[in-house]
Image 1: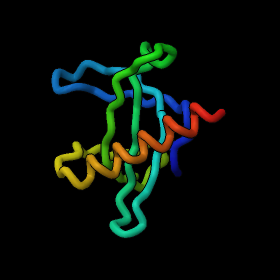
Image 2: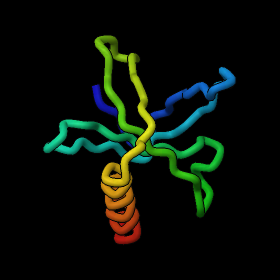
Image 3: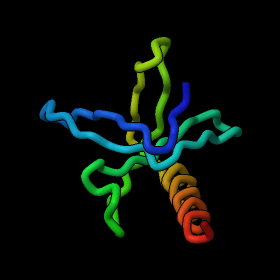
Image 4: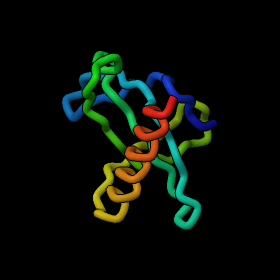
Amino acid sequence: MGFDVGEKIIIPDENGEEHLFETLFTFTVDETNHSYIALVPFEQKDEDEVEVYAFRYEEGSKDDDLTLYEIESDEEWELVEEMLHTVAEEDELN
């Protein structure tokens, strides 16, 4: 399935309240075969500074079936931060 940049995703919080996010980018690490997604709150998407949320994810058998996992290890965070810097540098060049 995959996700397109700008695709919107609704994520419920621990209280069941739904929040709308926009996909910033996704990537897969070949060595681990883990996929990651970086999201920004939809209401912040046009602001100069936004809060970025990142998750490891797995797609289910249905197109809209997605499981998000919190990133807990320092190694995973380093991968995500490296990709964030790469994407930010590419945006500055364009």
